Image: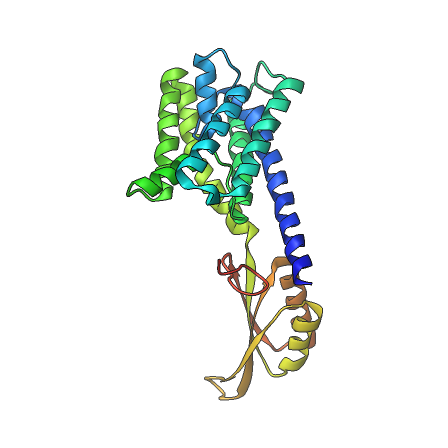
Length: 287
């Protein structure tokens, strides 16, 4: 039983990895490459080098990613992430296929701001999905991991410095307008990643003060398949005895629980708090 659950979890994670990689490639190929946006990462470096070398950005992306994977194994060992290897190879192959079957010589539209939004949101959403299953897109993430291992830099600062260097280079290789767009992309990317990760993990934390906890706890455990904690409390004003129920729900379950409590015990006092970091059985593991 446990083995089947673990197998299902692995299959689910690789479905997420594949979907995130497809979203990444769409954002990069159709909106980033065609506009020369270069706000970090291997894709940004590929955009720069494509301007200087007789190779297409998708080809350079494949070459650089494969080279960085080799460096990752050399400097970080075999344990630096099979998921990262999977995403790097799949992403590089996907961009090469798009280049072969859907060649682009100009941007999709004449609206650079609109295309910048898609160039930011799609890869950032993809990165958030990858980070959420403990994976990454490889590329400059590997450089950052190497810098973290051999210097005093933390991985966040190392990744920012790598991306910042690529973004600054865009101002010199292309023009000031492209450089400014790239700087906006660099700043917005991290904000979008944080926001998407928070929304993916968003849960509702319930504190229910009631007189009759049994039907509510039964509903939580048997219908919603969640756990609950109860303790006895005393009201400060009338000094009446109350029961407090603590429970954490996914967003869809939260609506069901709220409606059920309001129907079964209208006098119950309910507070619902958003939380994006729940660690424990049924949610996220400790590792």
